Length: 260
Image (cartoon, rainbow, N blue to C red; front, side, top):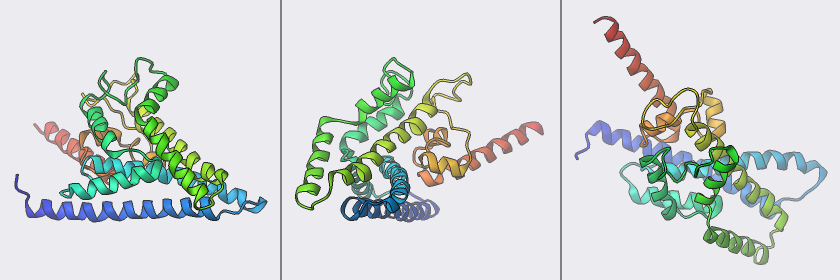
């Protein structure tokens, strides 16, 4: 299928913005990771700052996963599949030594079988928060990943002299916090059944929060989750505009019907 000049220009713009934002997220994450693990000196006067940095690092870790998620859909750098793979794999490796190759087919299966038995992100028969989280955790974490994390941690300790406590606080805690953030705001709230039925076969709700809170909770994958399933090629930063465009088209359609 040929690509028109406006489409090509839009893809180039999407790539520039997506790669630039990914670079900011990775650079900020690395700055906290390196400083916290290798250079942090504990004292009464540094505890409050450490807490702030851990919270920020948790959010940035969520951001690493969301960047990789965009890469899985080709939304990070449209028409550059190799760049998508490289950036996506790098982000998942930094976040928690996750395998991009292993997660890619699972996530596309989630979109194919959303909210049904074949969906790897769906609960395994226990829709409670605890039961669903355990299913989610088992889907995305493997023995291979634990081995890779252990090897990296040993290299940090034995070769670079990093304190184990710093590794736990500035890498393990943010990574685990991001798991909870991704699950609650990116999976459980959008895909659990409510009294209000799902709008369509995508079986996804958007969480009714403002754009700022949507960004802070899960890089818009809670507040605009239905929009993501409607348009998987839309990057995380474009989801609010996607809703505005969809709402505008719906309003125009109702206006036409009113005049018929």
